[in-house]
Length: 470
Image (cartoon, rainbow, N blue to C red; front, top):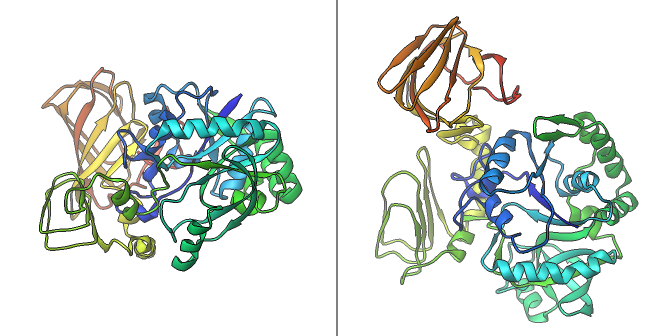
């Protein structure tokens, strides 16, 4: 059986300000009709696969579940990493979860882009025979240019059509070395995609990283079921060394293999990648959203919430969101991670949160923030319910814009429709629910001495949350 393993734990900081820790790039539509996670799931159609195993951050668990539900994905298993430990331990959790030890695991980062899914599937099928035979297969992307932003794999002996032994992994090269690699013909981009039997991966991990395997085995042996999620034991998992599968296993194994892959692959590692895979105008500009360009060349310009214009510029990346604008040279956007680090060090919320924040019940968006007051727009999805809660420092006034609200207000139970409202004093227990078939839109006006999201006492929550407010 072929089991997809979707790795969805990254934060995508090089695509800030659109990708942020609370909603990173794998959950965003970048280069496709759906999110990158959804595009990864769709890419599997046509392969004889079992339900996917997803390894993700606990904070993102409801986004993973909802986006895969929208794709009608068959009962995925969602494993919640207690903390990031890089790819080798994450894959070990999935391998231990796989129902049959000889199941083939197709390991896919959930934030890659592929323009030719058919070629991708054909390469996976070609690699299945050596994987079944016990080889640890990786996929080497046929390079279209000398690229300094990717690592490379070097192929050894030819084993079959497009299948080679793995000679070595090499680090990201400088420009001259990258040109030499492409001219050589035996070097391919390191895709981060893998295919192997679960038992063979665990065997290799035990041989080369026994402490890592032992920690993951203990974590899964003590794992708990939480709603539709699996929570490995945190204490055991945190004892695992952190390392990538490349360093932990593939650079040491003598059973490595490479399947060459030519499918229009990109890891969308920076804004320049969106320019490369986008549809350009006659002047080489790629634009998304409400954008007007004049006498501009070879730019990537993206608008999320308003009109963006550019005049007489070239080789720039301009990205606008509701609360931030990033302008950078196209050949320097890999360095945006340093901007995010500076924002984080300054405790700026823009480092991790969007103006629109998604929750399992829907979303909220800050519209106005002033001295001791804030206005938000709440969108509650059909059938969803916020937690029963109270606040010590703020009162709230709810005005229903559309839909029908079921409200708990102290001991009262209210049903409010459009243009109706209620007031929640400081310290009063309250809850908001949408029992209807359409989204519920509510304007929330907060007032008080402190408006932080940590001013909450939760009494009951249908989603079993403890770490996230509201």
